[in-house]
Length: 454
Image (cartoon, rainbow, N blue to C red):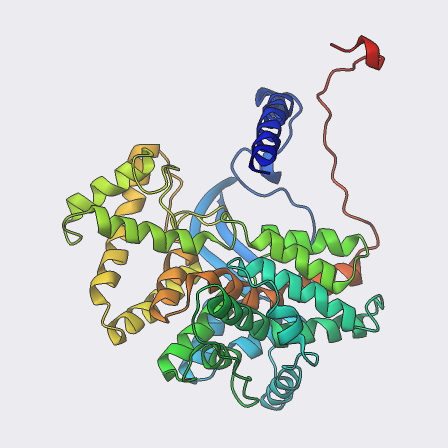
């Protein structure tokens, strides 16, 4: 048996060489055919592929006919994210539920509408009989995103109206998924933690009167306990991750798969597959791992010179994962600042102080200050580089004692709100399948009969 497996793998290795040889495309051809790699122009700006009323991003201003970078702005349904967060933070109110309402329905809810909506979400926090035992507990995996996608696809089997594409039915499906996503994510982790890591199994039911953030902490922790500060900062994280324009990878995936006529469960599973990649939703895990490596390899983490030397090594592919990246720095859209990171920063400092991790916060603040200068010098990039939301979110999740396996699923718990809004917007406004064009650069060949192939 061992010999057969070895021979099989050798065969795969030989075939992979052929895949590489035939898969390579001369990079110069992208310029010849004016192809926007990654759907981005030469300046890194995304190619406009659609219209949306759900959210908007501003990263530059036009001055004298030229694009000039400016402080980043993010608006949900036209409302500045900073004003939105200030509103519920100052009122000491949890904000994710009203943010979800805003994204779905285009307006801020009244007090009465908000209470009714929260009650609707609470009513939806239930799974089919024995679903946890028969689906989530079976084949537990460290890969929570695959576990989450499997659960979503299995839920489709319980929906008698899966193919009804009316907005009323799509909204019903989306609200149900928004309600149960925290359960699917946390229960998936609990199953893995028990069956794969040998720890005790806890399956706590969500409480109807609690917010999404509170229920996540309640279901995750053995004693169901959490502080108000912990819950409010997790709630803020959910708001900041709920939506980010129609052009991000997973939201674009939502539009593409929706345009094909696929059902809601297939659309959401596809979006989850997109989000799980380290270039998208998995980036905050890399930030945490990078800082762990920094602390292990820098003698004095309070010495700016030593920390700067480490950052230089990162860029020169001499440290951490040797990819040449300082994770959490820079963004495809923002240059001067990421508004989400700015909002997060003040709350991160409060949590760090409460958790007695002030030294860690000082280190993060130092890297946030040094990294843009190091990148500008070593990479000769002068458009501006700043800390993005992932720079702080991983640190927050680690202080909340969230296991790293749940970092990206928590992102999904937030982003399902944005995906749902975009799915409905696509259905309401489009009747064509999204079908981009790829230019073939393969030369023509003559067919050769089998006995004449060498």
